[in-house]
Each structure stands twice: as structure tokens, then as C-alpha cells.
Image (tube, rainbow, N blue to C red):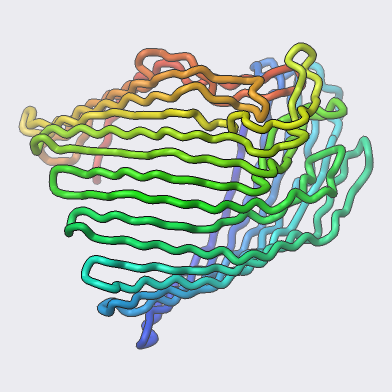
Length: 425
């Protein structure tokens, strides 16, 4: 079960200051969440957990954009956020084997503060050549962190800060008004974090993750044909990874760093309109995603389900990263009964991938077929539709991880059919 309540106040202000346009985005958000989930993954709930979470979030962003009309266009800005997250209760939820009162396992909290300044500029060197450069400086801090596993006592990790400069550069050339080629290089990062849900190392920091991303590609868009093709290479350092594990008989999320990971591949999509009534689309992605250096990768013994580690996961597949995915679809429209009929289909395919870091829990390749037909009356007020999802009733896993009783599996939805009536007022 999942219950959530959010209160949000947001203010957007725009101001013309002559040489540029200034936009301000302000938001205050309060979220209260209650989660109950079964570790035995049955409706019995013999082994179940319950958690309460409350978040207070404030964000402020200022963006300054240059006026349109010149060959030199630029953006500058600043960003601030303050996120206070509290877990006052994590413990056993009501279940057939749960004692009363239900025992509490954990309470924890942390405050995350982030500040950044950034700038980005594009210069049109010739009629078809565009050069872009940008940079961002970010300061992140984790403050007031604490965790209290009642079995081992409280921990109060010190303030943890991360500072990074992340640049990017893009060169783009228009071969024609419909077609352009480009190349880009950019650096991104993810701040250091505390693994406060760990019973063994609640105060141990997880190193900041960084990535260099390189991409080259071609884009084309005309009235009948849209076509995109790109090649990419991602070089991760200290990639942050999370896995569910049972440690000291307590279910928890273990976060760790893979020292290096590399991902490269080719991505493409195409759509073509044969007539005003009939069009097709297709897409694919081929990627090679592997860990480069990952010493002490968390794993488990598939015979006993005991948590363990392997010396090095070098060469193993990155989690949830299939080598190949593809989709193909079609849309047909026609006049029917004075109204409009739309028929749609989409077929999705994925090759084999793994849910865990050390390839103990795989999902074999599978395909999903979705169909939809809808008719809108001549007044465009009423729409009748019938749709089928996974109409071939393919069996596949959405999630699989270690839990209190072994390997917990959440299956994808079986074949589903639905009918709907939509009324426009």
C-alpha cells in the first residue's frame, strides 16, 4: 500500500529588464508518505514492513536569457534547494506473524542543500554553423544526518560536502533547413551521499559519481519523414548503485560505488507518413554497458540467499541494461460515421538483462504488443475507445531482488483490455 499527500505552493515571475529576460521559479513543497509492503510478496503479508516519510522542500531558480535576434545567444542562472527528509518510523507492519506492538527497526533523517551557478552560450559562426559552450559550478552539502537502528544504536555522520565544475561543448552544422549533424561532449555528476539505511556502515559516505558523455549524430525532420541517428560513449567514475539485501536479518538498501563503468552504443528512430491517414514509426538502441572496475560488488549465494561480495565485477553487465531494445508502431486514421477513427499499435522488444549487480537474477528477452482503437463523434465531444496492453499475455519481471525469504519478484501486468468513454465539456 502507498499513501501520499503533497502540498505545493509555486510562484513563477517573468520580468523584462531591457537587455535580457529574467525568470524566477520558486516552490515550497511538503510531502507526507506512508508505505506498507510485503517482503514475502504475497497478499498474506506474513513478513511486511511499514514506513513513514516526511519531506520539506524549498527550491529557487533564477534564469537570465538574452534577447532573440542576434548571432550570439546566452543563458545564465543560479539555483538553490533545501530538502529536509525524515523517516520517523520504519518497522514491522501488521501481518499474521507480527507481534503487537509492531517492532520498530529504524528511524533516520537528513537535510540536503544544493547551490549552483551556470552559464551557456551559442554563437552562430556562419549561416549553418553553431558553436555552444557552457559551464556549471555546484556545491552540495548533506547536513544533520542521523540514523538509529534500534539493534545497534544511533549514528550521526558529519556534514558531507561536494563541489564540482561541469562543462559542456556542442558543435552543430545545418546541412539543410531539415537536416543537421552535431557532436557534443559534456560532464555530469551526482553528489556524494550517505548510506544511512545500512546497518553496517550508516556513516560511511558514498563517493560522488561523475560521467563524461560524448555523442555524435544526425537529425532530419520534414513533412513526411523524421529520422534521428546517434552514437554515444559514456565513461562513469564511481557510479553509485543500489541493491536490496538482507544483512543481520534486516532488509535494507545497500549503496556502493563501481570504480569505473563504460557504456557505448547506437540509438536511432524513424517515422514516415505515407499518407495523411497512415504513418509508421520504429526505433532501436544497441548498447554495450559493462563495469570496468568494481571491487567488492555486493552479491548473494543463490543456494542459501546469504549476502556476500565478489572480488571484482569487471566485465559484468550493468543492471537493467539490455544490449538491444526496439519498437515499431503504426497509426491509421479514417472517417467513420461522420466522426474520426484512430487505430494504433506498438510492439516493444528487449533482449536479456539483469536486475542485480552480479548477474544472479536475469530477465530473458521478451516482447510486448499494445493495441488501441478510438472513435470521436462529429461534434468532437464524445470519444469511445478500446485498448489492449500486453495482448499476447507475455510473462516478464518488472522487479526482482533479495528479500527476507529469498528472491522477491514483481511480475509485469498480464494481458489487459479496457474500454473507456471520454466526454469533453
